[in-house]
Image 1 (cartoon, rainbow, N blue to C red):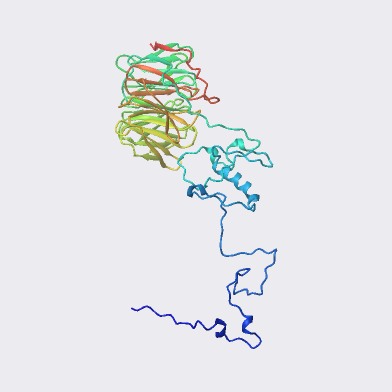
Image 2: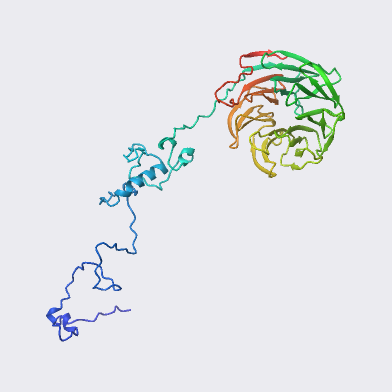
Length: 486
């Protein structure tokens, strides 16, 4: 294709000669030389429009402020400031500092209220990439940390509480059985520890370290569970023959013997004057120790031995765990479980109700499960699951802080202190050489005692006091060393 040709113009002809002009205008009066207009021409306005000096002119272009731009990134020097943004610059600096913190090396500006808030350098880009993934709660406040506001005191972030990795006391406990389905240790509200050893029950006073032999069941029977009443000095003892004995520990006298189970009684739980007992015969019996009958209600639902029982703190719900891998929740008047949880894949012995949140229940599974699961019985929902890597034998919640302790068997035999709900480990305690099958907490909520098939009871200070997190537990703290419980 050929190139198009451009029409030629006579060089002798003037541009003005080609124009048709009115008779009143002469050709020399018209000049077409290029000139620079004093203002842009807008055909919608016309040449006769003259803007008022006091009126702002708006256009369709948006020119952003360059104050927060990072010119150094592209080796560009920032444009000189004409002083028009000085009025809003101080406010923008204070807002940027409050939201994103102070950069190293920056200096605080002087402000009328003398807050002396730090200022970020102009080169900082607000939307820059940050490698930090965690921020303290103070960084989420609208004006930064507390010490930047008048009338507020600085609240530094507390360091994680240190938990002693060694027990402060060890007791020898000969004949302490290595049986996952038994519950042989309990701590009373009067600071007395009850331990079932073989066919006998021994009491250890934590204040005086005095050991008392409470009972001897004889060679044909053995202790399978012990449980203190919530108040008073009554102790329930479950036996391998299916009987339940009530003892007054203050007088070392048996008050009553109750029948009803055909096989061993391995789990006990008190609710005021009501005592629940779980057995290898798969049943749970509700007993009112004020009534003449041995039991008032029989709960049926488990398909195997009942090995865990716990009443909620308001005494309205009873949680039971069994060797059938089931966790059931009962109310005060039901004979069938009102809630059934089947997520565990091994026996459920470890059960604990939260004293901090109504309806929050924790449960732990055996060797094939190894998980701690959390449930909301109010909404009938599964909240979370934590794989611990070991058989979960016991759980207990601190009443002083929102933390709990778990004890474990196969294969690590450890004791773990958890912070809830993050389920972060505060401490991992070791020392037992067998499964840590038994766990109880002191009445002040600071000390736990653990028992294992290695025939030892170990005392650990793991929780803070209600008033101070640095106060050492007074229970047995002055009795260091290793002694015998019998």
